[in-house]
Image (tube, rainbow, N blue to C red; front, side, top):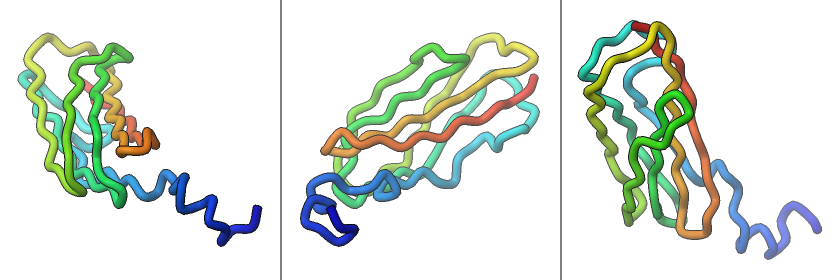
Length: 104
């Protein structure tokens, strides 16, 4: 299938889902309570956001539209090194994610 085929219109690339202005920043030192936030955009429409903390699902939130400012407050003890992952899904089930490590 060529790059410009109509097949691409049915299965848009992952880059159509953008996660930006993520806080906290990767590699930063943080304390609890911790605010996790990000600006989410999807060309084809947002469907849901999942946030993982040290590989455990903390929150699933269903959203709509093409833009959403996501915020989640985490209020429990942090380890010396913590992994935060934000996964964003569009209405077609495509996903994009960002992972970061924060220190306490």
